[in-house]
Amino acid sequence: MLSGVRTQPFQSGHGPLSPGSRAGLGAALALLAIVSAVELADGRPAHYIALMVAAPFLAAALASWRVVLGVGLLATGIGAAFALAEQTMSLVTAVNVAGIALATAIAGAVAAVRQRQSERIAELSRLASVAQQAVLRSLGPQVGTLAVAARYISSTATAEIGGDLYEAMDTPYGVRMIIGDVRGKGLEAVRLASIVLGSYRHVAYERADLRAVVTDLDRAVARNAGDEDFVTAALVEERGGTLTIVNCGHPPPLLLRRGAVIPLEPPAPAPPLGFMPVVRPRVERLEPGDRLLLFTDGLGEARRDGEFFPTADRAWRLLGHGTVADGLASLETALVEWVHGRLDDDIALVLMEYTGPRSATAAPVPSWEVGAAES
Image 1: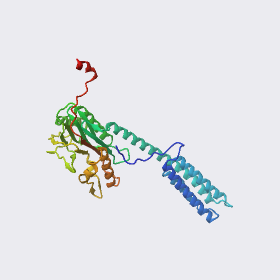
Image 2: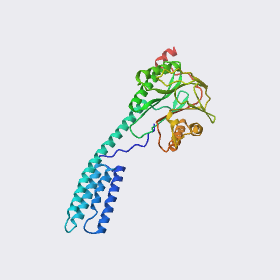
Image 3: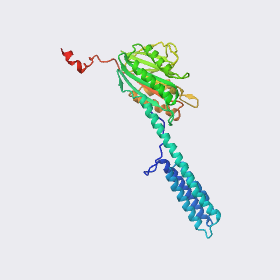
Image 4: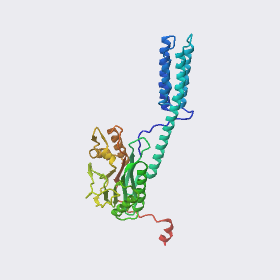
């Protein structure tokens, strides 16, 4: 899965400075150097040391509280040195030095609060990633007769996560896949996605008809979703080179064949899971080398300056080369470049390639049946 660029947590230990701390320290030291140079050029009495009060606050915007205190102590020391260099220290100069010391204490407290918040966000992001990886296991590279790859593109670098879902399994009824999108975001969406996937992983092995699988999933969603919650989904089955698709309010998959891109629209529209969909299957005969792209609606909504990403126009050039994993990597790169790194919604992608019929070799005999088979 791919997520956005995440904020690096600020280091709280005594090890090497983080990039943020180095930037804050550099900016603060540059300010102190400039003020000191101006003060030296101006001569006595000290007129500009009050400007040094900005140095700890400048460091506090990026650096850790330890760096902020160090900068503040340095600024206070420089200010005190200029004050003591006066023949007679004025009250204004003394107040300016005290102000630098007070600003150091305030800036250190601000940096400590900001650092704790940054660390909390980083931890929430890590926990969210772990939770989502527990729901979405990795796919491929081979599931039955299909080469399969999947990617998850996150629209945000914070802990907010979505409910996009996918799965592919080799069942007694052929290779079965699902891709879906839960309405909403956050942990509630992930919870409902985990319920759908858990139900699917069970009923995909138990129901011979995809329409029965849809009925079971619809009941699971209805039992666990709120009044306004639903799940769009497309279910795909490949058995002996025959592709069967049922669609519950989801974007239609794209079939890539010999340079052409064919949207596999359903014979009749059906509502999402949770609204008792009555689906009609679409059946296609696959050819070796055919590829099928399953995606969530975040791909269809990706746009820049009001212009949507031309998925159908560019699908073959991006997805028709190399392995299926190579194809998804190319699509992701082109998509992120198109939107300049800003997505409005998470995107789940699954790309499969039909490699031909199964070989006619006999299935291996379980070890506990070897003796019975030989007799």
